[in-house]
Image 1: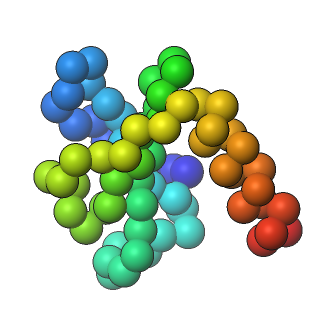
Image 2: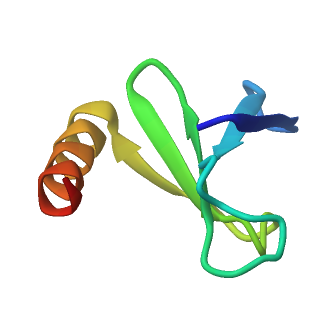
Length: 70
């Protein structure tokens, strides 16, 4: 992930979009991490509520996805 920006929240979240995402829009997600939670949102509609998952569940998801892609 390489494109990150802060959004107002308490505490403030730094949202990151994958370097594979283009500036043309499309189906992109952004993530923001906290010590025990990962927030996920639609990059096209940043004003909608984000999905919050536990960091362990996120790590399991990323590992699963990496196995399928790699």
